[in-house]
Image 1 (cartoon, rainbow, N blue to C red):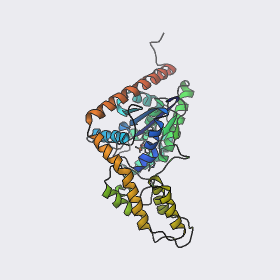
Image 2 (image 1 turned 90 degrees about the vertical axis):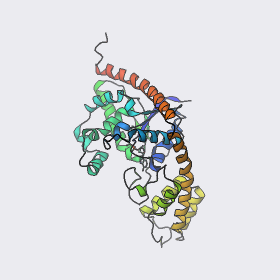
Image 3 (image 1 turned 120 degrees about the vertical axis):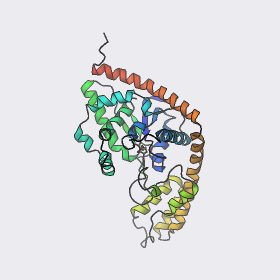
Image 4 (image 1 turned 135 degrees about the vertical axis):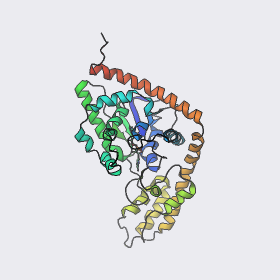
Length: 336
Ligand code: TYM
């Protein structure tokens, strides 16, 4: 039975195939949350325009993200699975919230600073107000739980600020949204090259995609950085080794992880064997998702139905919120 008190909302940009970070940071939680809460999950196509203004591939990319979400276990009958651009109310709320967001705080956002560094020729206003649009997505459904990875923590903090600012200025409409994960803390899946998180745009060989074929998975895992191994028992692991263990904990059995932990601690670890094992466990994890997603992606009619039904559900909730918003803002000039 869905718990109507807690509403869940989250989104993923259609800027490429989903990777392990997207799965363990976000989608895995979605799949569990759909059984317990009223859920709104969307493909953030408008957000992708801030960095990818060319729309030639957009439809295909939206279809990919939808297919991969469904292949991971998301049931479009249980949740509203929709496309951000289909919900026009988002743009209206985004506009109102923009008047409550200050240039100084937006310029300090870590993701904005990263994007300025990556795309110095395209520092557009949409990029600056990216967290405002994200807030509109979330509070449009008056959501309280937002399943996301660790990299979205600051955006969620900003969403709370904007929602509270709106409530103080105009009247109590929005509950405070919070980043959510079933575990004890938000997840950050590391990349295979020892530095940073797995991401769609950075080093492709250091990112495991849910669409990678078996050989490519093996190749990427075997290339992961290692060294000659520890020389002192129970020594601290360097970051790149810690990352391999972290990845192993996501897909391998506890026994397997324990065996390699023990080997590490008594200095008998063979990283070649560890990576071979990790590669096989990754293949076992990714292959069924990839195959399912491929089949779904080829069914255009089904995907169109999913998008239409999802948009209908999301619009219903969006309309109810926007009626309240216009009311508290005093924009309902025709009311008696
Ligand atoms: P995006 O498309 O970058 O990522 C989608 C989800 O995947 C998570 N994620 C990770 N989690 C753990 N480890 C990683 N290496 C990793 N890489 C990505 C992200 O935290 C995210 O949960 N701004 C959002 C999209 C968005 C959104 C929203 C999210 C638009 N509107 C409303 C929540 C609510 C983004 O760019 O996600």
